[in-house]
Image (cartoon, rainbow, N blue to C red; front, side, top):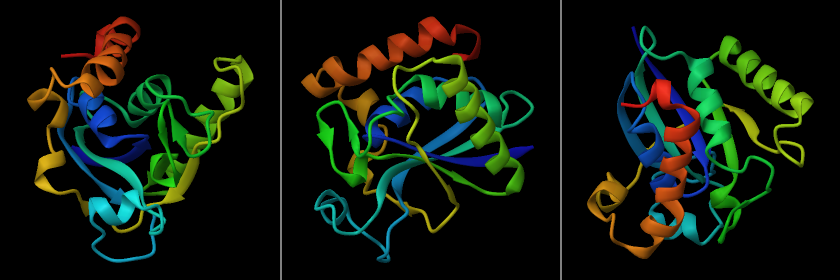
Length: 176
């Protein structure tokens, strides 16, 4: 069965490139969620005044990868302990958030956060928001498949490539 998941883990170029490499993920679409205006643009969101966060929408086959496995990958491939920041990307548009579709997903999110905090996986507590799914606005076409089309760009080499290597080393059993 095909399902949807929504993750915001900083720059959507990073999260898109991670989940494009996960077995069972059919499509990854960059966009914006969690704000208060309709049809925001990249420029609007980057100004930090819309309340949106850069988010990816994932279509996945739950027979090949579970929501729990996607959550685990999400938390381990970005820093969920920094508020409104991922590395040098600073602002509320880069905050860590998960948008759940139903009560079961909400429970899984909070259970995952609680377990990771309890196990001390990160030095600091997780600050990732868990929000009810809201309107998803697809990003402009130039943001789609960004890493795969721009692997030589410095941001891709120094920020995204190490995240992909981390994915492949920790979650090799889930990668394509």
